[in-house]
Length: 99
Image (cartoon, rainbow, N blue to C red; front, side, top):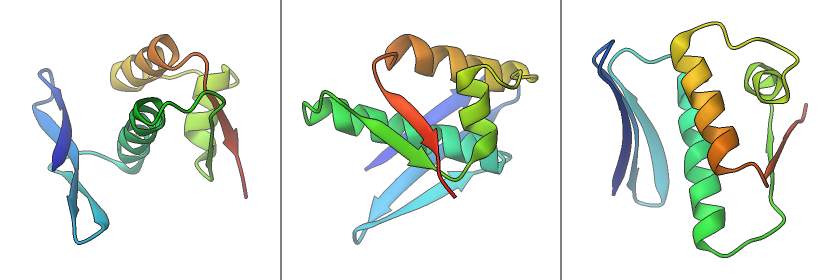
């Protein structure tokens, strides 16, 4: 099973591959923030497909949490698209920073 987000402007593929109960991030030019966004989208879709109502995603990625909460600007167009898509699709879910 594989999930991917494709960007036409930069021609990059970022995805998760699942095998032997492990997930592997696959990217040809992505960075750690993009990998984190992809993981949050996957977890949110998974929670939604399981019928969970009150969902809080916890992460140690302060960058993404601060973009979602509006404390930091999403400077790149790609990060803005991830943030806007997540908020539009999963507005009822919370994401918290943990240490």
